[in-house]
Amino acid sequence: MNTGESAGFGLGTFSAPGSPSFAGLVLDDRVAKLEALAPRMPGFPRGAISVLSLLEDWDRNLAALRRAADSLREKQDKAGPDEAFVPLSQLQSHPPVSLPRQVFCAGANYRKHVIDLMVDQQMDRTKDLSLEERRIQATKFMDERAAHGAPFIFSKAPSAITGPYDPVILPRHARQPDWELELAVIIGKPARHVRRDNALDYVAGYTIVNDITNRDLIFRKDAGQLGADWISAKSCPTYLPMGPYLVPAAFVADPQSLQITLRLNGKVMQDESTADMIFPVARIIEFLSDSVQLWPGDLIATGSPSGNGTHYNRFLKAGDIMEGTITGLGTQRNECIDE
Image 1 (tube, helix red, strand yellow):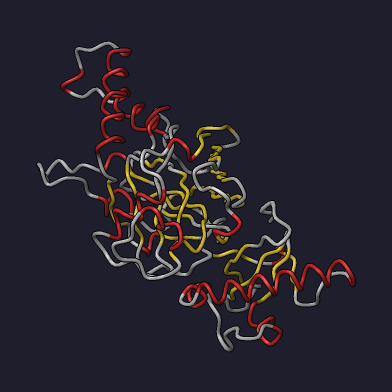
Image 2 (cartoon, helix red, strand yellow):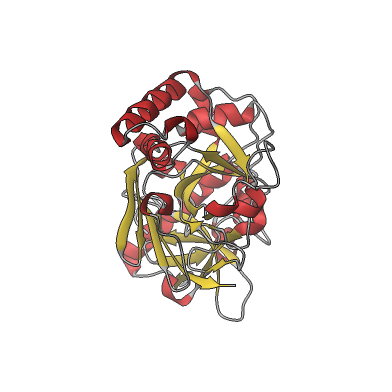
């Protein structure tokens, strides 16, 4: 991977065939096993190391990781590749944080996405309006929400998480599985009642997630006014591909200026900047930390931009291949298969 800085690197969880998984430091297309690097890194944890364990003391461990990355680069420049490295192509990539204790998602958080949803859906109160009139009404609603509203947050089961190149299993009972590529935040220290002015100080890094959603199962006909069913709609196994890497926040200059692109079978379906978020990352953390205790390693998905299957009336089916990328965070590729 290449984050655009000479000292940039990623963290991930990997395994070789027939071997247990391990935490690795990613430089370009090579991975160094952190347990092998530990003896060279004063103050770095010894013994079993996971990305989650590193996040428990993130500030200190990040400093050690930066020194290690600089040393590896220097050695490579002078003497060729370090023996600690394994080519990325020889390893299986797992979710970089395996597994977060809590997963939170911001819903309806991209302006164009929500406007498209409101226009596309034939709601009772807008059925007599023209397409342009519905768009004007939806735009006014979103402007009001951005000025005076608050993020909408829900939870997703951590058991839905799968690797960046693993198959997405489409359940037998789902008729409208949909893609939602998103920027994900990984928390780096306990956070409670955090103000937005310093909220980004609590971010360890960023990664990519795809918040797969069964559109036909969000609202249950037997539930009346009880609200959305996020378990059936969003928490099926493999419904949150994650990775390939955790890129430290130090190497992401501005989380509100990243490009999110999803291709379905090679065709671009989503292509939007994170600048279109209604509530930016800092505001989401502020709002969420006022309600819950955030812990190191927690994952916050920040919402999906426009271009979902609902807009195209095209939903996932077996054989589809989703390829998602976000600026500087790598690319994930997932094939859909039937359960």
